[in-house]
Image 1 (cartoon, one colour):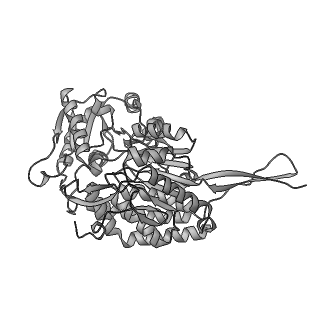
Image 2: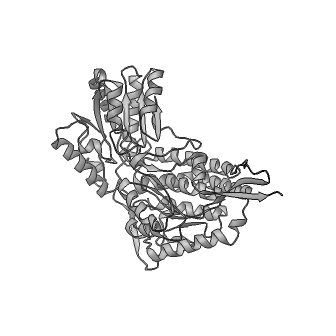
Image 3: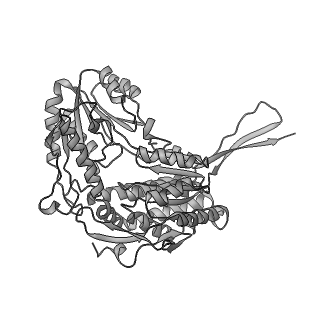
Length: 490
């Protein structure tokens, strides 16, 4: 991996005001390949003072300099240039995400292609920001609304999709005319840093996009509480989301959160069971289960539950695990030793509570797996709704099969969770599809599919899975203020 052009040279600096700078105290962090343990690169460990500098640069860029004068067409052209550059360097980005956090290369390649499309979608949306003409009762008054950028935005992103999360946060910022301070996850910061380099090449003015790498408890906490930030976006766990809301309360900044999930995936006997079994594996084990909307509670109608569980286990066991740089690999490692220990602990507790493993169930340690953090796709049998592994988000490749008898029962059980990010439903009955979709408490419901996503369709959670929406017009609205304009006409 030393041949990757982004892994050579001195530690990667912070991006503040258009310049690469070290952390003020000179500290650094290291990135390692979770498949091999190999050292990849060092990068700056930013802290409170660095966040102060980045927010000041973002404020200056928002209020002065060339950025406020950018027209919608200017911002559109800028986003199109950035999309072209990401497309140009797609293989670099795919490889960085693979070696930095473990996702297989054929998946990260597909992700980059979708993200180029996402940037071009935001480019189009830059020209579609508009208010409305109101109709006040006073005859001598004209009233309308105008949309204005909210200001300096902060974003704290997770490690399970570094480039994806970075572009998802940056796109609407550039489309609306805001500025951004991004804090990547310490476990996977390389692709966001490369994106910052391309943003400058695309012509993003200095200070519009700033990146402070570092620890969540240091740089992340400082960004969440900073009085100079007008809006904060966070993607990650519900526990950290609560801490961020508390930190943001002191300045009453706008907050949007995309948090954890424990999503139900419900299969009725009248569904296309072959397709449902294959997609249940994708829903639960994609990215080694490190997906917030993973369908890890698999409810199956009782009459077909045993056969269905065996089919799922068969498909899961056929997946190829290994170093993600191999294009034939389906599942890579977990991101870190810490995450591997977390998944292993949940598995041990599930066994202690009486569950068994139809497949998987223990860390892989021999031969090619010895130096990495590999845990195979695991299908639990004998699981119940009260087990911790069924109630709590594991963020790893563990799936529980849960039999049910009828619609009312499964809706009640599916909704009996603090989370509400996504839900899957498999049935050949169109009436049931409509009934169930209406009753399921989730931000997205996928019928006879799972985790479908498109730039034009909003995504987000309810309950402890967050607030606010990403993608679509709703995502731009998160970055806009509505100003009412009154003009006396007499």
